[in-house]
Image (cartoon, rainbow, N blue to C red):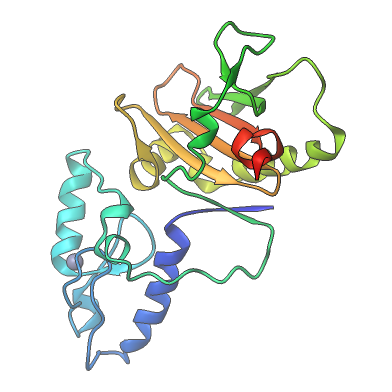
Length: 237
Ligand SMILES: [Zn+2]
């Protein structure tokens, strides 16, 4: 399993197409992915983005630099190419790719009935099977697992949970707390708490909600697995 974080691959693919216009100068320069204005037709005038390996216009390069300096990173979802639907879906050569997005497509999981898991008095959705909790101690990640029902996880589902978890921890965005913090600002859904963010994904049998926490000396990543077959709306279909 491999994990993509939207819209990273889509922006990289767009830039791969756009850069073909420069030979080395562009007759009709493509639009800046960040602001929508035309790039400079003379390639070196444009700037390599600090967010990912794509070129943006000179003005955006300066704005990004100033924003980074002030600790204000603009999320990729507000880039012109993303917000205005200029991106094309990335062809997945591998069907085993999971995309994480800042938008939840399974809110019915949280709106539905709840249960009280064995290890906690806090109710959780009935379909929650298991969750992991991880913290980064400055050198490495430490992860624990919690079962949300009294019965063990069906053996057939275990490899899917393991594969997702393994792929997640291999992401460069989770290399350390600094990279996690940057990824949260660029890719994740903000919450009312400025140090907490959400990402959502879906595998064959699970909806997956991740809560990412950028505080030091705290738990930094919760990953909740909701079994699709046990989600009331799905079961009723
Ligand atoms: Zn621009």
